[in-house]
Length: 159
Image (tube, rainbow, N blue to C red):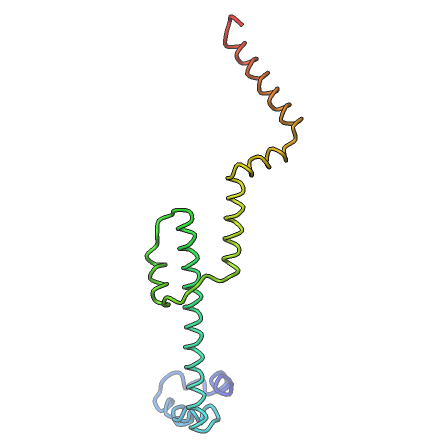
């Protein structure tokens, strides 16, 4: 923060480059990053190790999530007989063989599959017929028949 204020308010001629202006800034900044952060050398090294470990852990979690999504896409492609994607297969290989699809996503896919199976079966078709309004169905059928008759009468001179 002090650097920002100093650079904004500081000597307006220092940016011109008349020589000697940059030496003061280099001397003012400590050469040791631990001192700049206000820590001892050991604390700074431990802090850097923690940062590296946390980054590696985040990257591993991210890679695992991407592999889970790729696994789900592969399952969906198999289910709907779509062409396979090499990118998804490569992602799964990179993450290793221990990648499973999350349970929540599997439940969603299974629910969709059971709904489709129910609609495709004979019992599903019969249930659809039971849910239909028979009076409305009869009206539609009679309207269609009368419409066909009228069109046929228009086109055929014998009727």
